[in-house]
Image (cartoon, rainbow, N blue to C red; front, side):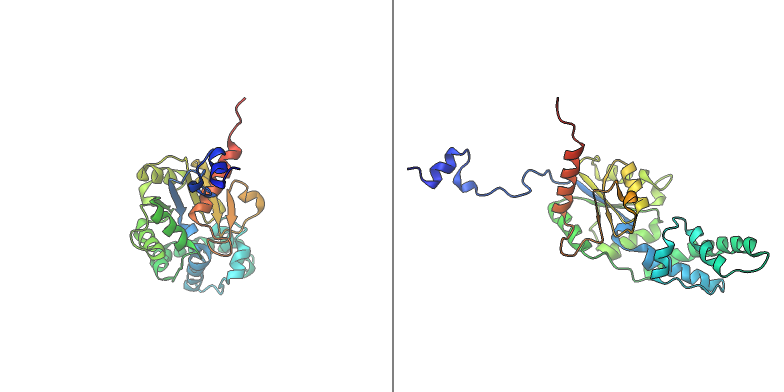
Length: 267
């Protein structure tokens, strides 16, 4: 009678090899690239707050609550959101003209105030972000951040959110001719990788479109969207924590599944 060791050897592997890890056949990721909105909820925690300050600066009796701003987010353009509420407060024959002018002024004031207020807004990282970034650092996987914001405030904000020395490179609007896919491509060049085995993490559907336009497999985090808007995402997550946290191994598995679906079987 064969012993357990002999049967295991005959099966093609040695008994001391033990069970293979579940992820043993998954190629490790080569980089993670976040857009800034994937690190923190800039829309509700910063943009909303600064808009309220801009309304107050112009004497407009509007203060957006988180619930109201969430409803306004169906309008993708900031100016449209401002117009929507200004029109609710405007009456008279010259209403439309005055509202259009005031919307421009509020948006201009908000843009100027944003740079001054963003670092003092008390923003916090999305739940579980520290664990994912820690996984990447422990595995030697470089982390990059891209943003349409200016380096003057974006760089210290990233340090504020993830800590000093945790990010390999930060690409801002100061580094590219135009915000968009070019920022992701520059981040790839700066960390010396191609799009293969790289996962982008975006905090908005606009960021999802930009990252996928750069050829990156992308996970959408924290964004509220219709299913049609998230169709290109590897996955949609409320944040990085919870009962099923989004860790580095999870990102690798999602990428592997996506790659296998895109592979055309040999004839």
